[in-house]
Length: 241
Image (cartoon, rainbow, N blue to C red):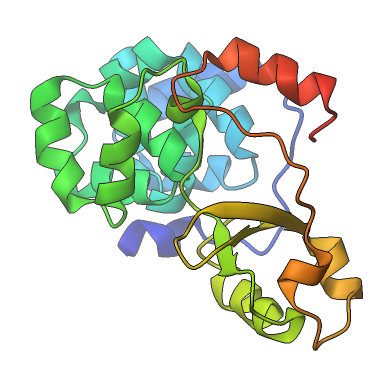
């Protein structure tokens, strides 16, 4: 897209911005004046968390303008950095096509969280446009503070009768669509979870070993309606991260 070209940079983005009131004022004024190119040029050196901090401190109308100017990928990253209520307010004027594209940049659990904060009529318009509409729809059906509401639906599940070599190929094929792969979920022929295999163990095992031979059968699971605070306590108790 045109604005993506404008924003392109080969330099690593600066992080840890000590919020500079002069910088905020400059971005505010430039956005109000419609100076898109200058705004994008300034922001191109900054980390998305710092850009979110700036957006939080400029006038609401200008914040909406800047958000709509940003490339889709970066704008999507910003959504998880903004306060829920403020984010919903900023997205009021975002075109449906761009909003859907921004949500497609997020993990399904984050996309569901953002969508849930928007008016129901917006949800109805945007949801069918999402690449992972079915997964997001499923998450929206759970209470936001429950295990189901915070879970991600992108993961790698492989049959227990598959070999390490076959499983490694599946992981490779899914590396771009599943953002973080630390664990392979092993299932039986009925798609029921039977074990877990860490990525490290997968890589260290013999190519012809079956997943059923190397998987960990002693795993902790919860129902989707369990409160997220209870989930957090289980994670801490069993050192699951």
